[in-house]
Length: 330
Image 1 (tube, rainbow, N blue to C red):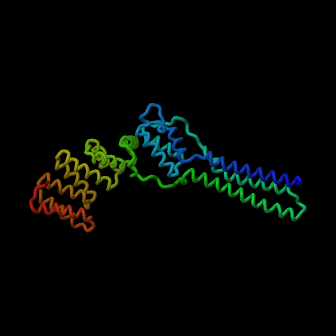
Image 2 (cartoon, rainbow, N blue to C red):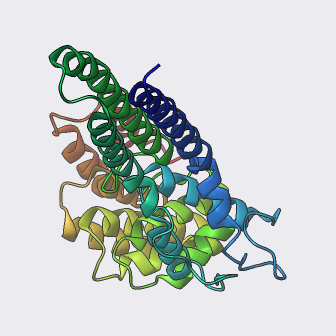
Image 3 (cartoon, one colour):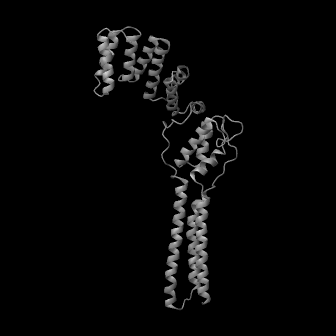
């Protein structure tokens, strides 16, 4: 075999082996989502633990924080963005080691480097082949094209592998504010305490207060409802929800009819069409102040709403019939 052909064969084998090794290396060393979650979790100190990371701590807060990390990784956030959010949201959370920068940049440059390396190998290969034979030129053109395609395929596979394992690109939709089912009360309290002036914290306050309200823990629910009701950053819906709950707790918890009516009226000042505020005010007028006429008037106003759900309409109609019959509130 002529020396030029031997050299060409050696270059071909070497190029294929190098590119295959590069592909295997890229896939093996590129971190999966689980790897990233674990790596970030090991860098954050658990706020309620003694020197443990949130990845190692069995506490509920640590598990909640790690769940948040997993959500943010799935949403395409960078490590730095996730760590900054944890440090700002959880009082007492600190880094256990200094942050790294640009640690995965080479992973995104590797496919381009692979293509460049392929081009260099092909150029060297072609220069080493005979130049005075047309047939030889044709023969070396076919393998060169095949080799170029092989380099391109390997580079594309490596690129897609990196993107798939790293997750969606930055800018993916954030986790919804109401995705709080798996977040403990303890963690929500910590986040609220660390972000009292954040406009979005009112939603979390209401969610936490609702948890307390549903189990009858009015003492814990009250300060959160009160904070939202008085917050200049609360939306109308948030303020009304808080005022209505405060009013009903005032009546049901302490029998304070006048205070309850005042809170319902405040909610109706924000939105005079609030069915909940009207209905509960009617209940207090009927059950607390024995004002059947006032209660009946409110129930009738509610029934005039053409968009009232059928089950609500049936319930209000039953109450109105009882009021008209002079039935005492049960």
